[in-house]
Amino acid sequence: MSYLSPTTRFSHAPKPLSCVWLLNDGQRSIQPPEKGISVIANPPTPCATAWYHAFPARRGMRRTKIIATLGPAIHSQEKLFELVEAGANLFRINAAHGDWQTRHEWISWIREAERTYGTPLGVLLDLAGPKIRIGSLQAPMQLREGDTVRFCLTEQQVDASVPLPVPELFRAAHAGDRLLLDDGAIELRITRVESECLEATVLEGGELRSHKGVTLPHRTLALPSMTPKDREDLVEGIRAGVDWIALSFVRSVTDVMNLQALIREQGADTPVIAKIEQPAALDDLESIVEVADGVMVARGDLGVQVDLAEVPILQKQIIHLCNQHAKPVITATQMLESMIREGRPTRAEATDVANAVLDGTDALMLSGETAVGAYPVQAVRWMARIAEVAEEHLEFLQVGELNTSVVGNTTVAVARAACTMAQMVGAKAILTPTSSGGTPRWVSHFRPYQPILALTDNERLWRRLTLLWGVAPLLIPRVRTTDEMTTQALIAARQTRLVKGGDRVVLTTGVPVNVPGNTNMIQVLTIER
Image 1: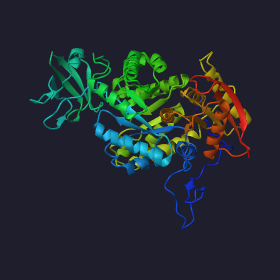
Image 2: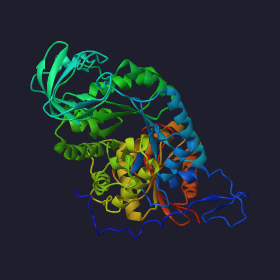
Image 3: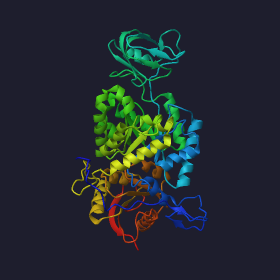
């Protein structure tokens, strides 16, 4: 199915919303206050403001989510708040860098931003994994084409050789293999392998600095999927209340299942994102997608492990498979790379972001652009703007084009019916109360035009839902009956100002309420005038 529909302009779309101002007399206004009227700093209720940040008024209704990686560039709470205002929905903590004192501070800023803006913000902890790096150099080395370089099994540089403290690499390497340094920026060909040293000829040179990454393409190293440091970071992350955990260098579905077991041992249920960056993972991709809670197309390491020319096609294939299984998928790495130094993206980068949206990605991730870049806020703004424009050309759900391989699942059937009904009756929104996240995930899978308001009384789930395409998570009080759920859902919908009196909405519920996986009822309701 083609995602392009150049002539489509949905004239029935809701008009963009204006910012809501909370005045000192308790009244809310969609117009800026008159001069002399003070404004209370506290925002409207979480239900009211979640909509504005999921589909911000100043950009229209953006359905694709944005993940911003934290780093030295986000050096203050004020700077993080600017990222939220620019459109960030989730924040990535890269466990390969920094310490937990800094990470705890970031998480506290994120939770304060939630209270300030009344919107959920997800935290994604990205475990470092068994990344292979060279050791410490006495000084940067300039490697030139044709040079012969010697690598030895040491932590520190002791002579002209390059320290490489990874015995597994020496056991896996063969003469004739390619050896890539610094994420592929430097390429060598191995000419000789010994037990603790190897020699290689430089094919493409460059400056080599300490602790840069090393890749041995097409060779599987006997490394564990998680290091002792990963296990420590996992425990600390669960204690800190992170919302998602990403597993690096996944090779098989077993790696994902082992991490899920470790999470359960900690008494947690934190969902797992499987990062696809190894050729072995591509061989087991369908099983990984079925078991993982989400997937990341990690194009950085993937692009040095496989032929770079294959990466765009692999991206589309991975996204398509995730869409089929209703698993959220993140597209990552070098999306707006030039904005580490420049205030505007290149045309090629804008096209890359738009194509990921048209491919069907749930979320777009910024890495160095926000972690160490000179223009982190501008990077988020540009990504949001490009995604919004690309979404104007998405081919939204059409009746008769609903497809899924799942048969016999009531939740999936109700989600499909909700999307069909919403389109046929001209509903302004689809309301999906949830205790596990399953129903909004499947409604999102069908890509309806209507916004998906996911209602939950679970604060952890409220944050996790920020990753799903088209979903605006709303926090509501706990209810005991279906009637109470219906009442709270309609109140929450009204507070978003998305719907008004006389509008129709589609509501999915379960009888009895608060039972995971029990969505079994669907209603078309009209908002009272």
